[in-house]
Length: 206
Image (cartoon, rainbow, N blue to C red; front, side):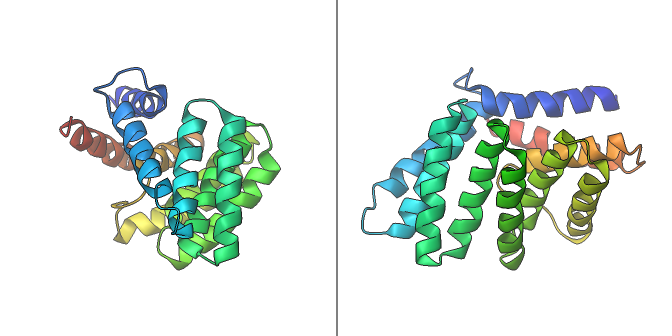
């Protein structure tokens, strides 16, 4: 049963990236971010909105495997947010930039982007997603110890809070599952159950 749930969770994450089905959760997320990016980029007098819009656009192009374009959009979003001193926008843009760095095989640069994002997001209460990204990079590099440290902080958060409002919560849960499974940690069943419940709840929306 656990393997089936895990397979469904992984499939859901892959579906989010696929754009294949216009009625799927994947397409919903993709077009939601596209709409947000277009709305935000349509506000030329608002530099913060421009940064957010470019970051969303970078995320979309990343999921479309157009990683060079994704990098360019995310990099510009980071530059605008830095110039403005807009911390929430910078945290999000750095996370998107980290995604593109991973896709381009630049893992050390991805860690730098994700680490900066985690520091910013911790200050505004949005740390789990950035930590999950760091854990995934650590797994890619074969550093299970580092991945475990990042996931431990996420689990501390989940012990007294939820991922409500977090971008890509499935990614956070899937990362926790992957790390706990690699460590043969008995908490893997609990995190899988929570993630699968979230997946079922999201499925009822479509």
